[in-house]
Image (cartoon, rainbow, N blue to C red; front, side):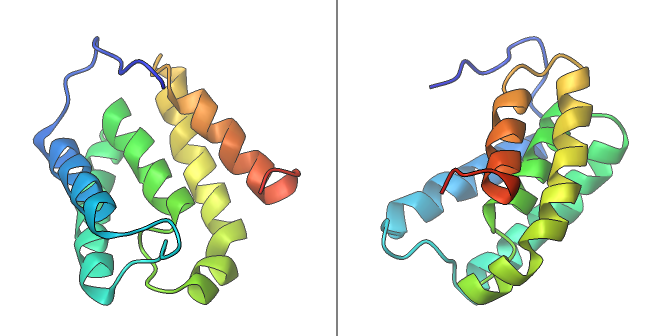
Length: 123
């Protein structure tokens, strides 16, 4: 497990996103990775809020925007996720790199995983 960076203030919008991730994890099982349209709507709302902060330079928001794009949170079915994955990897990578360049230490690990899943051999 990674150590959460403590030198950065966690915005409320990021805490709200993390809470919904935890809640989704409690109701989904490993065989049912995709989300319902209700959760898709929630995560798209999170994306809109986090993008504002990410564009203002907040590393937590930048990291979580990368996570939203790379993790399929904005799609309610696997087919849509797969159709958009390559373009989403590019978007996710941009935000993860911005976060990492500010010293957000967990961003490079997710960046590497995302890139390898898209272009390498990690499944």
